[in-house]
Image 1 (cartoon, rainbow, N blue to C red):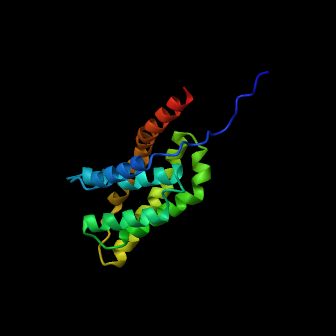
Image 2 (spheres, helix red, strand yellow):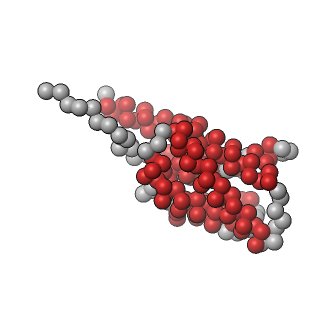
Image 3 (spheres, helix red, strand yellow):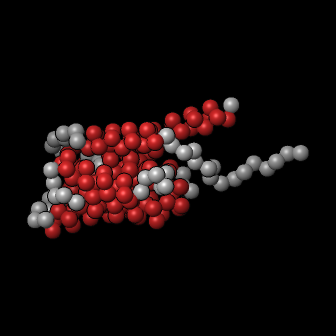
Length: 173
């Protein structure tokens, strides 16, 4: 007797909590690196992209509370308006949670396209909070990081899926 091959997405392997914590800390460290000149405008929000990856892949472990705490940590590290990134990260995490079931069923290229509006909403929320705090809007260049963050989704996804795929392959053999 032969069985039909199941179709559809596979059940994701639970990620090691240490992998989640270390990847988020690496994203924070990458955000704190100094960028100069025109590259400063293209610098993606590494922490946000990694955070949204984990919100999609592990929504029960990483959600809006983690986004709020990481946003506050980012605000303290940058010395900016306290709550600016916290609010923006939380709104982006909320949008990702609302679309999580849809995003997870797409291939990586389509997931990348789904990240563009989520990263744009985060950037708009950050601009709005900074404007209310009295900072001047710096111009359209501020949105270049949305494009680079969207392009960063693919390598981040591949890099963070690699240990989980290795675990799945080891369990299968």
